[in-house]
Length: 281
Image (cartoon, rainbow, N blue to C red; front, side, top):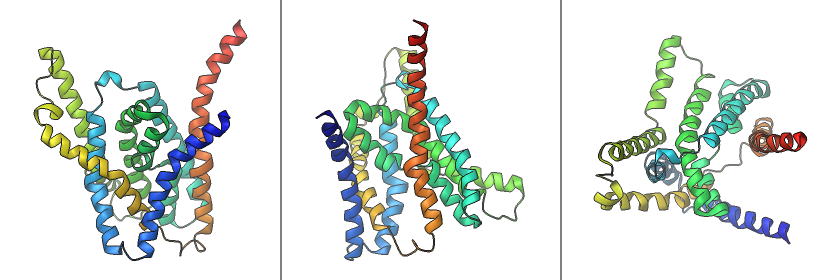
């Protein structure tokens, strides 16, 4: 019975996300979502809606003290390790430089904001959503920094290494998701300083500027369905045969290897102290 309940919980958490993606694909096939709409929609999600969601999530963290540094440090280390292993894998899988960066991104980068946050909320409720929101303050910038690096290292450039590094740094600094997280952390810091200096918070967006914060929350609430439908509408299967080797390698990393490394490492860190304690008894 317990296994059935676990299965149903997982099913109820995952299926709504899959249905929204499938709806986007179906609407694209029926002509409701045109190429122009998907292009604009993708830009709207990436440059406005997702940044609003990230800013609200980070701003809603009660204080800097609520950041779980153990989870944050482990997650960052796991992402960095998967990035390094994926780099060697991408080089071995294909000789085409343009495809290596995409494969590498499949290895380490997840749809944490679009899928991860709503999935955490579905599985663990508000408490899990809060932990995931805190984690996004670090992992989302890390994902985007590594993504820029992944797409840049395989591009042939005539520029000098210094100019290339400058270009990569520029792409990182103007990334809307990173800017949103930085603004959220900046507001958290200002709030913390107010509490330290004045023993209470003088100004908060959600109280003194509630009209603005409510608008941001409205945008945040619409982000997940719009982003998932746009994601589904962008699915194309025409290149599957030509890219079969790359797709198999990327899927293997995304579905099997990355979860084994990330979750397996976390489980090992939890089990080792327990085993050690049991052996010493």
